[in-house]
Image (tube, rainbow, N blue to C red; front, side, top):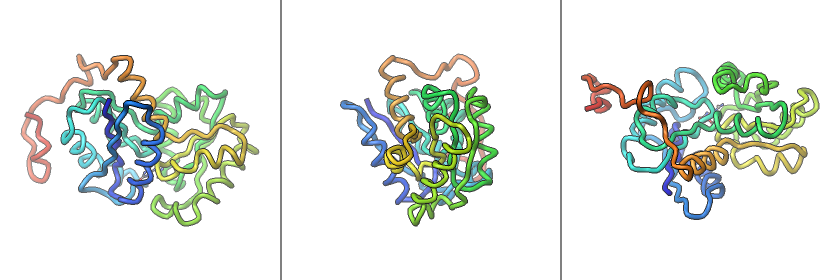
Length: 239
Ligand code: 2AL
């Protein structure tokens, strides 16, 4: 099967990191192609960034409509519903996959994310995915997404250890695709399961495709109705 992993920000370095994790997670017989949009924000850490990352994300789905499934590799799961309307194959977000996976691993998990301002979005998503009771805390290391590679590992490790000590969590969810390479190391160090959403989402898409399952398209998630789109968005018009 063929899965497209879309990093909705435009960072080459982060896309390479996400690709390494996605390739390592994929099972035999799965081919993964990891891309980032040609337009949009360099990183996603506000509601504004998130909104303006969505057109580029949708363009990547439209560019490769025959893939078996898609991963939205940003922890805010931007544009997930719109992506589901557009794609034929299943679409899974990394926050969704990580939170649902963590819910199998114990009673409660803590999320460790980048900036405190993204906590609200993570809490909203936990609610949306039915994980609000299991989500015991959302903690932030206060490091911007694109600075994670400079000293981020140490800060994430410290925050995860604090989560285990103070939140009573059974598992940790890493709250940014830029932390994908840290899961094994953090888990080995602090001794609890650590879920990276990129790996969780790749494996979730694989399971859905292997079971012959796709987004239901009879109602809310039917293809969007055709209508004129104008200006910069004219190429997004559904025909
Ligand atoms: C993210 C993420 O995963 N990618 C990005 O650009 N921003 N998430 C976050 N919590 O900052």
